[in-house]
Amino acid sequence: MVSDADRTKRPARMSVWLGGKAPKGRKAGQPSGLDRDRITEVTVRLLDTEGLAKFSMRRLAAELGVTAMSLYWYVDTKDDLLELALDAVFGELDLSKEAERGDDTDTDTDTDTGADWRDELRALAGGYRGLLIAHPWISPLIGTYLNIGPHSLEFVGTAQRIVRSTGLPTRWQGAALGAVFQFVYGLGTVEGHLKKRCADAGMTLEEYYVEAMGATREVAGFEQVLEDLDEIMAARGSETAEEMLERDFEVALDLMIAGIETMTARHAEADSDADAEPDESAGTDEPAVTGESGEAA
Amino acid sequence: MVSDADRTKRPARMSVWLGGKAPKGRKAGQPSGLDRDRITEVTVRLLDTEGLAKFSMRRLAAELGVTAMSLYWYVDTKDDLLELALDAVFGELDLSKEAERGDDTDTDTDTDTGADWRDELRALAGGYRGLLIAHPWISPLIGTYLNIGPHSLEFVGTAQRIVRSTGLPTRWQGAALGAVFQFVYGLGTVEGHLKKRCADAGMTLEEYYVEAMGATREVAGFEQVLEDLDEIMAARGSETAEEMLERDFEVALDLMIAGIETMTARHAEADSDADAEPDESAGTDEPAVTGESGEAA
DNA sequence: ACCTGAACACCGTTCAAGT
DNA sequence: ACCTGAACACCGTTCAAGT
Image 1 (cartoon, rainbow over the protein chains, first blue to last red):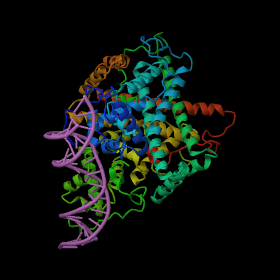
Image 2 (spheres, each protein chain N blue to C red):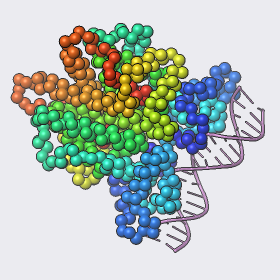
Image 3 (cartoon, chains in turn green, brown, yellow, orange):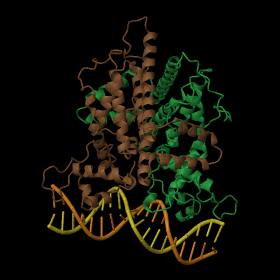
């Protein structure tokens, strides 16, 4: 668990989304105008401005003009509240660029109908990265919780649908999903922390780099590592650090898209003797999806 | 910061590795037999067995048979201690399969000399994944700290060297490094948490999946997501959950290796008119390396 | 139905004091 | 040089009590 909520023993429900207390409040009769939505909203705002480490039930209560204990009327534990905040943030994703949820699973499974899935993948990955950068605190939460709120599931569902439409054999789709979204998760995590630290220190990204590289230089015996970095910095021309990060992200995505295409093609030519569809789904070895939505989220 | 150490204001050094107090202790004159190495060692053990959330200076002190305040003789803050523990764990990596650190940068830059870099990449990525699974607590730390301890830098240096030997144009190498190791970071993070949660709940991975999927089923409106998972589970045959994860990891790596090969080939044919080396390094747009070792680590 | 005060069992860290 | 006790300013959560 991310918070220290485990200091006390408790029935240990797996997630807020499973049979916890009903979302109390709704009718406007509340003395303090509190309800789950409002609490969640302010939680997100506080986490954005002050970070996960400084967030506390007492701090939140103060912000809402109420005692810390009042919050426990609406929420069982701090962890529950963090789960709510996490899913709320996933709601910011604009999934409109993606196909609507269809009832039939067989619509998009053709090998290479248009370049659509590439753009969809780039859009979704970009949105996810944006979330991780705008709200750095979600990163540890994603790793920790089951992540089965409605908005998170919508995201995972969209990702699944896109990967299904790549033409990649079914038994590799789980791996492709993991490759792309775990990469974005890792990158977004680092970028999020990086930008937060810059903001907190009142530095630009450029200034931070100089500082960090100077720091690394003080650790003896690793001149080679530094040399490589210097080379890259020197050669980057007029690009800002921001642009470098952006471009690296896109190149990495291109690399994975190329990988998906190549492996799809390899598979197609491997059974070109049969005229079976490249994604015949039954096989002795199917790909794993971790079940953990963190896998895709 | 990962710990609550920021509750007090402090000069805010960037890392333990930079001009902190010298690693006290060494001579055997200590009344309690304490020194940095021993403290770090026990810290790692406690983090492994009880997790980051339960780790505290007081708990550690108790384990060492000493008051919490004694620790501050050897270490400035809890964060410093966590940085030490993090780097210690990177020391477990066996980097022997990789080429020795060479002084000349031009040795391995040929386009495609042997299949070596593929195996090296798989070995290093596998080792990193193993670390994240064996010590789930390092994941948030990697995202948080500068990560410039000697063992971490050794790891980053090795990763750089491998990517340099792929034949990929220099301006894409940063992205490739990010793609592979951020992916492993993301995957390892989720797998680490997953296995820890299973262990804590006394469940097998299989049991946990059933539980988690049943849980997801309770959230109305996402039958499609579940259907896909069911399909995958049904088709996986005799494979254990463990084996599924393992194979997904390897397929994802294959996918990225295929991506690197494809992009290298594309680049080579793009300037096949000139006989320039594919990694001529100067360009208007060089790839970024975040400077943050978290980028590769 | 909703909110509070006091209390419990914790934190990281400082500081003056001991040996 | 190394370690301690007491203290400060915090935590999440419980529980009995208020309105």
